Image 1: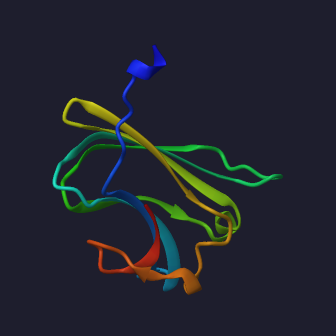
Image 2 (image 1 turned 120 degrees about the vertical axis):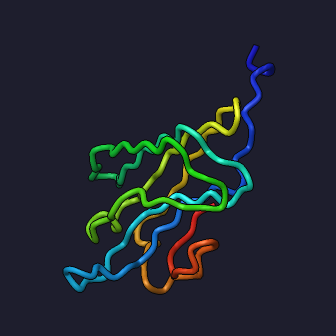
Length: 131
């Protein structure tokens, strides 16, 4: 029975954490984004994020996007500096046509930092990317 279930591989959908200047408070904030680098629209995008370690765990945060157009991105959430000390996991489920996709993206603790910055595709901003 299990062999009949086909789980498609997620390609060209990524999560990035980008450092951006907060104009009002004049601070450098870390914000998580979902990136759709494919040629197809994503529909009913469900995102559950949570930070955790051996001793600490944040409550799960849930987000929904009705549609994420092809070759676009959307902000998921702001990440406080204390949360960067934890493993940060983003579980993403979405539909592409009539097919459902699911993937988890993990930023290991302390990997979101200034030394790990790279140019993020589509956004042309500096950040940390998980594929």
